[in-house]
Length: 441
Image (cartoon, rainbow, N blue to C red; front, top):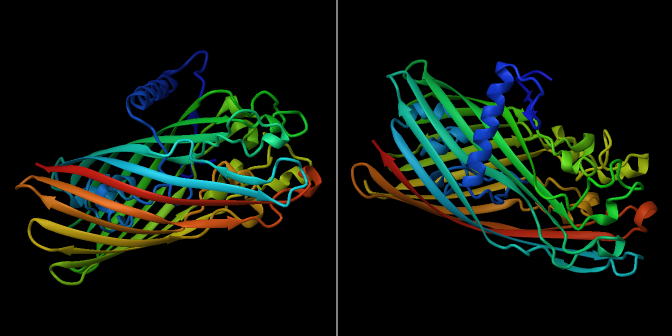
């Protein structure tokens, strides 16, 4: 697959590294070092992508492609660096998802019931961004942020009746370190590019019922193998253009990033493959009056490119096993997200924000049984935010977001030929609070 669409991840060092592989190994070591220093926690709203990056964007429903506000714009559109000048942003988000599941109509003794996946309820997510103008036309920056959020911990194992032992759940974490550059073509148009250096971590537990030859192509590599890691590199490109003094357009695209979890090659299709999907965002902003500004983004996340995420559980019925090429997975489909924002500059010191976003449902009704582990079903978010300037250079930003509770009720979700039938229902809601400090210099 060409670099423009996917760049290989690194998982094991080559026996005799040449200079390029040595450089990749060094980057992997840096990622591992930063991952050990930063708390990588779940942050999921649109599937397992965050609904935005940077406190100012997060208070505006994640709108950023044509609305650069802080240095984390690199995570959406690196061309936005050209509009920011010199600044540094550091933020911390409190993330509180609530996830539950129920199983009904199953003939398997003990499988029916209510299950709570909130064995771990609260998460803290840091982020950091920096931009600097190197010349009137050239800018550079760095963003450090997280994705992830396939996180559940069921103290009462929903799969105990089919052989699961102890508590059950999964945890997926993704750390992005993105050095970036932007180039101002003229007064109206800028281009940007960033490397996405990504460190992934994954663990699963309580899935012993699937850890056997009847279900997996690699028994012993399905569950309770501890945390596995993977490092990969991808590319992000962006454009920011001013069509009129009031109207700006922006576009950001990110390649897929290859990943692999060898410890779980009996769980994930293609022997443990777990890429990060490609995505793109088209946005606009409009200066309605000197104090009122509107913004909108349209984002597409291509989950269908990641076979362990996209392949349906029904692949079991074609003779495929967990871990096989084209083996069963979580059944997620591509999603598109519409984000709308309004910004009001109340005074020279105070800016207020509000936003709303809606995403397509990634999990079909016939795929809920395996997604008890990863119920990323929320679709609608509302956000509020503010920025208070404390002087000529410093500013505090705060925001709050709520993802409305969403239930996906199963329909033909438990394969009758394998497990006797029945339905699994999954539900999630989320509350998010964040604060950040920005320094312009």
